[in-house]
Image (cartoon, rainbow, N blue to C red; front, side):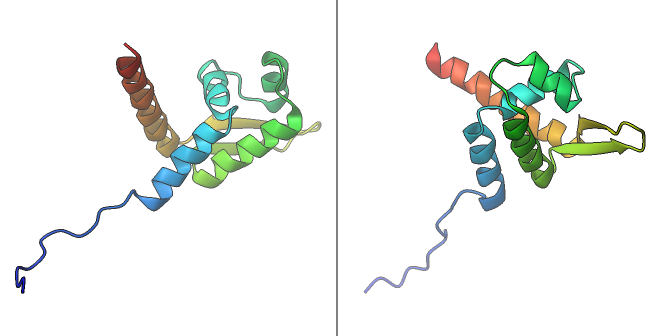
Length: 111
């Protein structure tokens, strides 16, 4: 009989952050949206006009996911006509640095 005490428990991926990375990479437009925001294109109409193949419906779904994760923040301006802009949150900046590191890792793997 083995009376040795187990020192380690099974380690699993962090549930929320792993799902977040999977969802963002699974959405083919999220990385493009981040690129647009980095280039100061932060209004939905500008985003749709700036990217071939991006529809308003798909953009809105993508933006909604990113807001739910806390990566982006939606700013509503009380103007007529209404104006909406998106910005990266402090958490989103951290998350995007992690995505940049993953991309660098991919380049190392490909080399």
